[in-house]
Length: 68
Image (cartoon, rainbow, N blue to C red):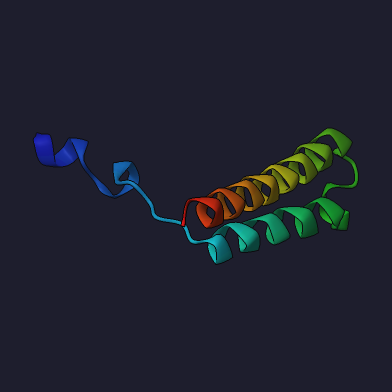
C-alpha cells in the first residue's frame, strides 16, 4: 500500500530554467493560437501563467547569483 501512495504522479519533479522557459513559451504560443480564440479568459490565464513562470525564473536566477 505504501508503494501505491508514492507512485509516479506524486514524486517530486525537478525542473530546470530551460524547462520552465519552455513551458512559458508553450503557454504563450497556445494562448495565441486560434484554437482558443473563443475562450478569451483561458487565453488570458495562459498568458498570465507564462508571465508568472518567467518572473519566477528571473527572480530565482537573480537570487541564486546574489547568493553565490
